[in-house]
Each structure stands twice: as C-alpha cells, then as structure tokens.
Image (cartoon, rainbow, N blue to C red):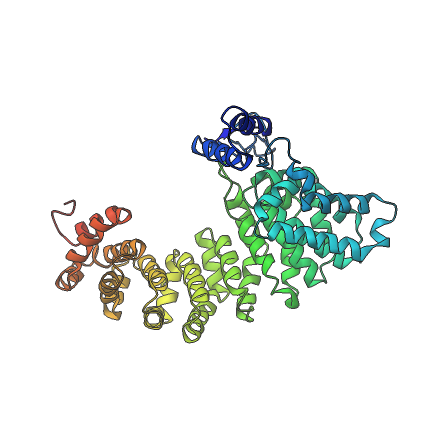
Length: 487
C-alpha cells in the first residue's frame, strides 16, 4: 500500500535538505523525490475512496483516509513560485474560466474559447502531459470543462467537440473520474450525445469521454447505464453512416470491462447481457459484415467480445453470421499481412468457440485449414501463432473428435515448430503446451506421434526456462503419459 504524502510534508523535506544538509535547490529537490519514492510514498495522489451505491452496494477498499482525490504533488523548491502559479495549464484554465463566466462569453468569442480549450488539451497530451493533467485536475479543469459543456448549445458543435476531447484527455484516474461524476458529467455528456447524434465529430468526442470516464470506475459505469447509454449506442449504431465511430466501440468495451480493482463484485456481466438483449451484438455483427474501417475493426471486435459473456450470446452471434464474417476477416487480414486485425479476429473467435455449438460451425467452415494458412503467412510472428494455438486449444477442449481432426490438419507439427522457433517466448511455449494437452488427453494415439517428434524434450526445456510454463508443461507431460512429469 502506498504511503500518503502531503504537499506541505514534501516542501518541508526539500527545505530541510537545503537548510540542514547544505544541498543546493536542484539537489535537494531530486533527493526528496528519490527518498520518498524508495520509501513507497505516493507522489501522484491517486488514492481510492469508499463509495456505496444503491440498489446494489459496491464495496470499495479504502486506501487512505487523507488527501483523497489529490491530483498529485507539485515537485518544487519552497520559496520559488509554485508550479501551479507559473504553469501554462493554470494560465489557460484561468482564461477559460474568465471567458466562460463573463456575460455572453460563449457567444462573443467562440474562436477564442476553442483556441484555449485546444491549447489545454495539447498541454495534457504533451510530453509533460501526466504532470500537466494533474495540475489541471487539481485546479478545477474537469469541473470547468463539464460546466462549459453544460452551458454550450448543441449548435456550437465545434466548441463542444473541442471541450469533450479536452475532457477525455484529462480523465486518467479515479480522482479525475470522480470529479467528473460529482459534476454530473455523465448526464451532461449523455444530453450532448442525444442532441448531437447527427454529428460524427460530436459522437466521436462524446463517446471518448464515456470511455475515459468509465475506465477503472464502476460507479461512473453505473451512472451511464442508469442513463440508458446502451439504448443510445444502439440508436447510433443503427445509423449506418455512424458505424465507423471508433470511440463508440471503445466505450462499449470499457463499459463492459470489470477494471475497477476496488470492487468486490462488478455489475458488468449484467450490463453485457443487457447489451445483447436489446440487439447491440447483432448490430455489431452487421457492422463487421458491412466492412468497418480497418482502423476501427479491432475496436469493434473487442466490443463484441466484451458482450459475448455466455453460451446463449455466443450462439446468437454465430446465428447472425458472426463466425462467417470473422473467418472472412481472418482470411483478408492474412492476405493483407495485417496482424492487428488478424489477432483481434482470432481473439474474438476464441471467445465464441467456447460454445460447443460454435465449435462445430467453425470446423465445418474449414476453420482448421484457414488458421493454419494464417500461421504460414505470419510464420515469424509468435503473437499470431499464439492466437491460433489458443483457438485450437478451445476447439479441442473435451472433444476427441476435434483433436483428431486438428492432428490430421497439422497442429501437432505446428506446436513442435512453434516451440523450436520461439524458445525465448514464454507465452508461445505455454500456449503450445496447453494445445498439446488437449490434442492428447483423450486421444492416446496422438501421444506417440508427438513424442516421436521430440515433444518431451521441448516441453521440459520450456519448463526449465520459463516459470510461467511450469504448470502447463507438467500437465502436458502427464497427459503425454510420462510418469516423471513433475521432474
């Protein structure tokens, strides 16, 4: 657990270094940062908070009872101007707040406001972005941008899009996302998305905020779901011209990812079922079929994967043509040597293959041959080979018939070759061991083939080289029929 440190304590330590130890200013500052970091002090100020949310209480771990939601320690020498006093971030924020609070400010100098907001965003995204963002959050940047969005009219599209983009760049941790929630940010953003659904720029910026605000914060996810963000997403996606709004796919994935480590039991599984029930999975399949832009396709696959949380949903995706579309995308990705799309499609297909009914569909449509062809196109890329072996592992799970087909197709040879070609890749070695297990555990006839090909030596080598492979390797040796599998 990180140790809390206040700004006052930090300044006192720097002052002591200078006055008692005779260090110069730069040396005193560097020494304080180093010593506190080695002692486990949290100089970022990102502490967690205790929240309970009805009707389903969300239990949080309370890190510390002081300095909650601080945006970070300003690393400065006492006596010099505080970073917040000289920071260009604060200067921009002060000008922005002054413009916003002045009578008619949003109407009189729209270009000036947009310029200020864009400058703020550039500062938060620059090389010093993390520190600049901390200063902006501490000095009311989140509240200022949310307030500006609430005051602007939907017709002021350029202003709103600029403000939303700046806001998404500022939402990086629980402290900032809680400020966003407490400022009624979710409702304000939802109102903008509903009113500006005809503008791709507004949609992209708005859903970027949904994604950034929901990341790592279960309560913000719940707020958006209470505001029926799922129904809004469905409405937007049914407009064919809007299916390439990548941030929309990112928003789906983040909303349905249990990424808040303060939560004892996340509600996102239920959210995934809601998304499927109202038809978002079906619309996502249609988007993939209608050729989502290549840059957005991985995000669309990740979104659909986050919805496929049970057998019923996986089967419905297949029944709507999802497996057909993915097999086609995998083939095209192989031809175009696009490994990002290939990996995304393989990862989604592995999730769908968890349904026994879908296993049959994939194999009947020539999945084994297609995947092997993909590995030949990416023979020097272990990440693609890992994804293929992962799929085959799922397809052969508890299915001796599929294991026999996989061996006939050449997956025993693939496992051996992958282990020989990528000995330093622990993940490749582990995945090969897992696949070998499923190829032999119910198919004793395959054991002799793999042992004759040198599987035992390769597995023992992987076990010795990679700690992450130990369990998988031992299990593979056992399933190969070797008595000394723990040796």
